[in-house]
Image (tube, rainbow over all chains, first blue to last red; front, side):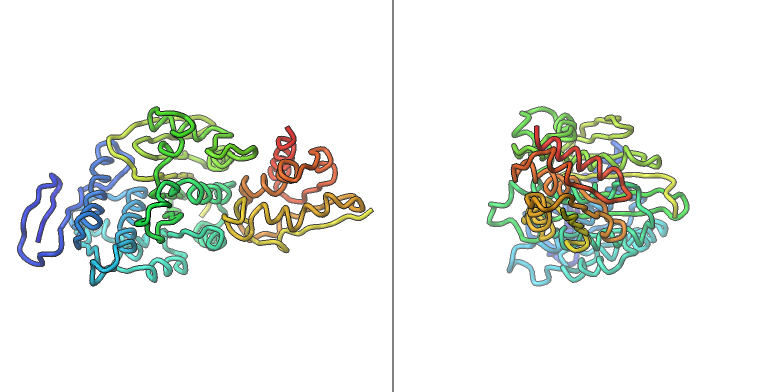
Length: 318
Length: 109
């Protein structure tokens, strides 16, 4: 058995020779700079072991002390991609490609089950993911056919949250369209690109019952806004590419009437007194938006491997 | 002169996207199959579009609205002022009324 610790050194362990053990950082978090890169490096570590080295892995969360919303969503995305996109014929038990040791900390362990994360990441394949749609209490959803699933998205959000902040449903609609039109365009001609990933998005929505804080996050594993926008803007920093994409009328398609999608994505923040922020993370860039302006801009050392949009609201009526 | 009323629920309870690639209930399909014929029919004086009969919690995205309404001018070549004069949007959400007017006006520029 091979063990990967935080320093990424390989150690041989006794036992099953086919399964690589990878220990998670103590904090899985994409909000705080000190945790951001380690969190993404952990995700890349098991992704690489599965897809490049074609190995079964065991993720050891036993020392996990904190897990934030966006990190949990990306974890869900990375694990389910491993479970669903394996090359045919290499693995006898593809849906068991990743096993997990749950956190020792009872509070964190409880969070795995109470938010639905465990149901979303546990060993399983498409059936497991389909079940998430009927479990409206689960914060995690994934799909790739928005026109068919959009009514279910609205319905599950409606049941979970009640009255949604204004314009968030329209923002989700345009986000799905952006993913369908742009995110995976660069991969579509790749014969190894798995059907599971065509237009694939992962979503998290959680309303804290006591504080009324609502977080809605969408993540895709596409080529990212900077790579998409670079063809029309030229090579600059990822943060400036994101900000450029957020301006009205910016579109890769040179057609009048297009390029309004990001206006819809920003609008929930402009239209609700309860709005805290919109966060756009893509490539290594992170841009925060609030009150009609960019309020945060930061370049990380590690790429997001796609695009993450997060809307936060406080004091939402429960 | 006739008044034609179009209720969105007769098209879809969750309209989505711009083109057929985005799904069956897209803005182009709504424009082509529900709107356009009435805007070129000289016996029709008013086209009333009821937006609110969609699924609970549903909200319209700009892609659908722009393609459906802006597309009457941008794609079908109708004059903005003719479309604006003939169209009446019924909704409790006045943002949509403004938005649709903007799309139609911008499409004529």
